[in-house]
Image 1 (cartoon, rainbow, N blue to C red):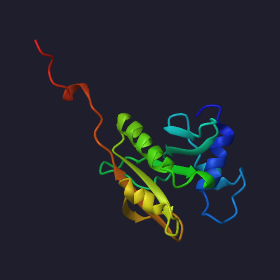
Image 2 (cartoon, rainbow, N blue to C red):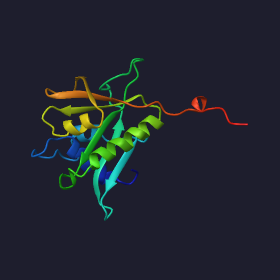
Image 3 (cartoon, rainbow, N blue to C red):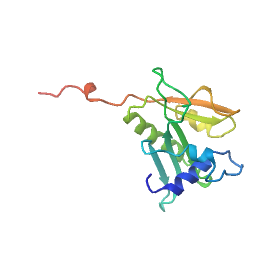
Image 4 (cartoon, helix red, strand yellow):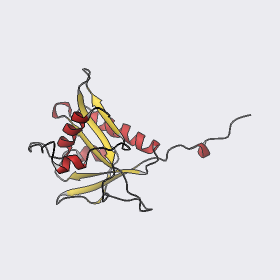
Length: 161
């Protein structure tokens, strides 16, 4: 997503609010706090005219939303799809692709924080996320999706002779 700063910021603004509520400013601390860093996984979905219609990324928040059994911070998903592009499967495809990338990078789970009234909760449940506890804010819910173990050389069958 290098060079896609304006798109990332716009998608972060969408991710930081509920539908029918005013978007926060691009300089809002909540928006800036969820932007992906260099080591985070990030994807942008574009329409047939190469215009961005959605984005998803993970980042590690400090303090993290959830930790794994060994105490390591789990990456947190941030996602938004433009209002005119919702209901077309873009969100599900972004989640699937990002989960695949996270598993390839040896992450054990993806987490997310969602407002109880956010209609995207149904999407998250459909794509394998389950409630894991209280999230951030008064109405936040933490959700987690386990990821398959990434293939490693030690798991490959021995070469045939």
